[in-house]
Image (cartoon, rainbow, N blue to C red; front, side, top):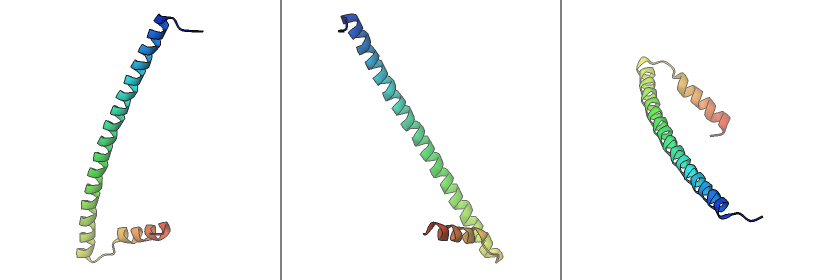
Amino acid sequence: MSLTPEQKQFYENSLSMARADLEEIDRSIEEELAKVRDRIADLQEAKKAARQMYDAACLRLGVPNELAAEEGEEDDESGF
């Protein structure tokens, strides 16, 4: 069964619109991923700063650093 010119035009328009929708969705996904990556980087920097303060406080107080001990255990379990 062949398509009439009107049917062919309809499907060509549908194809074009669907492709444009997919491209827009891909752009939106990339924008959202960039925001998430930036937020994760900010959180990692904040965690690093807090960890440095924690490590220094343990050192100044002369108390054991449980976080360092926990990380050592995690490293042993993961094989690193």
